[in-house]
Image 1 (spheres, rainbow, N blue to C red):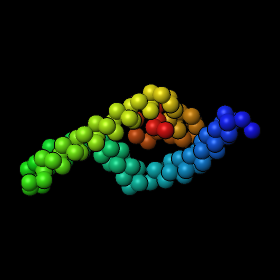
Image 2 (cartoon, one colour; image 1 turned 45 degrees about the horizontal axis):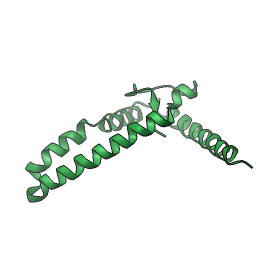
Image 3 (tube, helix red, strand yellow; image 1 turned 60 degrees about the vertical axis):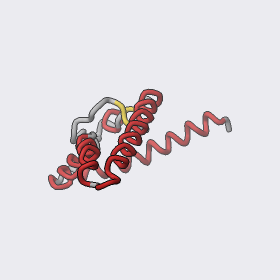
Image 4 (cartoon, rainbow, N blue to C red; image 1 turned 90 degrees about the vertical axis):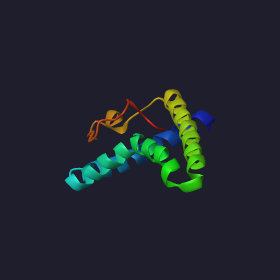
Length: 115
């Protein structure tokens, strides 16, 4: 079996499994508390919470605060650059675009999903 067909089969299986998980989660967001939870988690991941935490560390983490803030900022920058590069390179649609039966419960920041 060629390497590309093995890779193709792997991604096909991954998509099927992801679809099943996304469908189950999507059914659960019909309940308001669960929808609220996912909205909060989504917003926390947008960055504002992390920026505030990094800026507060020098004031609340004692002598280690500035070093921790710098480490978090550099780690965040590295991860963001890697994330953006992978998204641009892999160009993977979000599940609600690929699978019309999945409803978008919270507006996404951008069109493409992370790998």
